[in-house]
Length: 83
Image 1 (cartoon, rainbow, N blue to C red):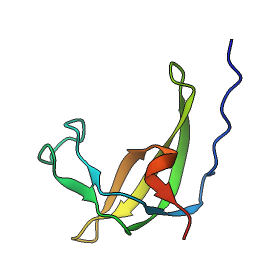
Image 2: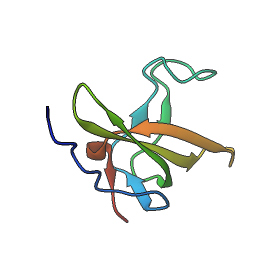
Image 3: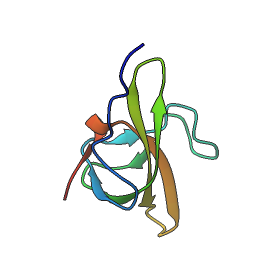
């Protein structure tokens, strides 16, 4: 059994998209390959989960869309940086 990899970020932490976050087809109502949050877009961690098979923290991050409505995107640590 592996020890759980502790998450770097916690609920409520402010983060920035380190890369373009692109729809892999799992985000409903948005075209596949569309950019959900561009590099540099600020967001806030709204939940932290864990992918058991890869022992990887997964973050739900709320970004604001171009229209100003909230967009919650699942992210890995490598896709986020601190402001």
